[in-house]
Image (tube, rainbow, N blue to C red; front, side):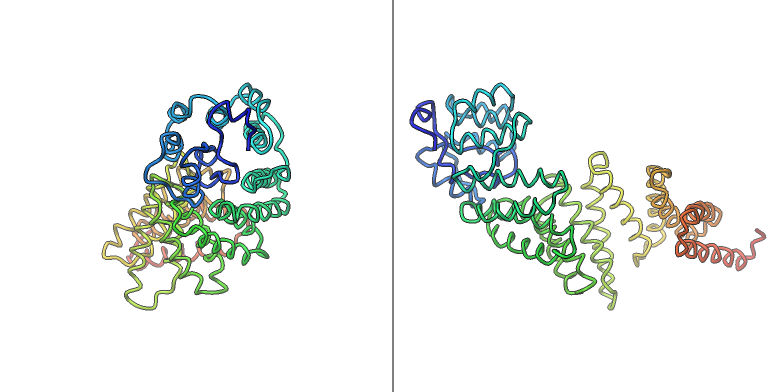
Length: 418
């Protein structure tokens, strides 16, 4: 808590232990609430990831922050003066001058948070989380330090700090702890040896989120858990069906507008999961239709200027699915696939990614052969084979040879003189 002299300078921040730091996305997740008549009640809801039906007037700025309003509008709604305003304005519109002015007027945990803001903007070093009295503040500082360690590739140190941050946050702010568990899981998934621990953290994160009104975070955890289970499907086929459920939950919670990366990735991976399932009954073929629809959702979600890799991957998977989908419109599907392959070939850099280019060319050549466009097919296949030969990719070379042999047999069968 700030001292009495500081409190006289304006609305005091709510006791820092009760602040909803890190619960919501930016900018709300780094703002402080005032210590007012409804402070504890509102902060309790927010720390649980829930929102009050009506925000008190002195917390109108936080409502605007949750809506991701323009920072200038949020600043205009802040209390007129005092440390609360100065800290939140520093977070929303940082400058070295405002940081240096504020750090001279604060102490204790509030000063640590001012230095935290200074660190995020390159004005100072990150303070040691062990200096904090409030668990929420300590967890916030520890997680920021973990992010730095990840950047310098000290993943073991980062994982250790994230575990500490989780332990600090779990009682003060379960939603913050859930988000930190998700971060830790992402780190642990990089190592096969900690794969099962990562899955357990993601399950615990979902359980802690419960009825929290943080759909983007919940969707991201569902997506990450689905990916982890999907990767484990070869060892345990049951994992694939569970992964499908989590992919579907992720697509229900967000939209292409609210969270394009999560929405697009969930739809693309959902399609790949469906396509990898064995077809044992006629009704199973419906999964092809669902998969193609999901891939179209993914393509629409990924703006190629923002997510070029995701967009290209979704387009490529869509083309591949169209080739093999049982359909009364198979001819139309094959033509669409050829057009997609051509579009991707025009965008791929043959020199930077020769193998990727060759795979697309080989796929296109195969489809062109099925459409009876033999000359175009042979040109694409020879182009791809030359690249595969350069890299001694014998399996791919053999597959292309089979398609070329098929083309020659078809020519002979049609009585071609070529």
